[in-house]
Length: 478
Image (tube, rainbow, N blue to C red; front, side, top):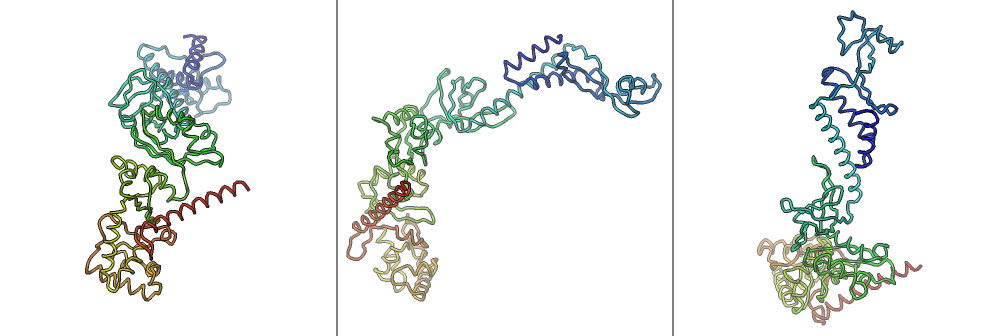
């Protein structure tokens, strides 16, 4: 191959493969060195450089400058000082000087080796380009064509490379045939011995969020924000949204005129049901919305353990739990709280059982047992393990001496009767003041019945949340 042909090949490969000329030239230089190494020996010090002026690859053999008789010289490693000074007048003994040598003729094996080196260099460069291109697109939507199935995983052709849609990341019930258009979420980009591996997902909650971002201009413009997503792919999803503009309804923006926006997302997800709920920084209000369409009667909140005991009317229980527990499970994922759904009749029985158990402590009457339960103590062990300060929050035990006595009697009762709290109850000993004030139960308080107390407490929390939102809106206006 002459100089003109070599330059043309370099330009052609660089253009076709979108690879820098320097990388191709480096591959050619390395291939030349491998061939030259066989001719001059493994101990020969060689360098190859592409000459941009002549369009050729110059090969240099480095030799040590010595003073010796010609017949004693090791030609591949040494050069007589007289011959060296013809190349470089300033060289001295023991210097190393590069002597330009003829490039070796490539035999069949040498040519095959050189070809492999060049292909490997080009392949490595392509892999680096692909990795650099897609690592910055991680977390974006990717569209490609389904090509084949390998070990249950769908291989997606993206043009310059392939991506993998694992079997577990395909929505249940979906079937793709070769040639089908596939849209997915770029979950991860990793390097391997086979080059960059792109992993896609159609089951990720972030895929759901990206679909809404495409369909809803308010989300793209930052007016509406998706706070949280929870999914059971192919079945049901919940998405919490909030608006930064009080004149924009976040739920309405996501639903669209006659539901056109949300229907576009549902169609892409093969009929997956989607609940769009307003986000709130008030956990009780947020959980109430997340459990819709079920109506909540009361909430017992344990902030320390991030748990909520939700009481609903008996006819609302199945609606709150959902099919196979789906509604409450998604609500828990969305809000980040552990949720325990209980019916009014079951809670009433549980309350009666707890009060009876607390009465096993010496000197505790039914009235005091009710006060203890109202303060968040649901077992004898909770009383025995509580701090004096926590027990002082119980009406009737404000004095330190009385609280200490209750703790001691609770410890004695625990040794005698054990932890007799009813199955399924939650221990809320040590609740903070804020959590205690947020507790609503079905237990009567004074002359009011359980239902009146629960409804009034829930109304108070809703009113406080509304007032908080109003104050925030006023601050934004100012």
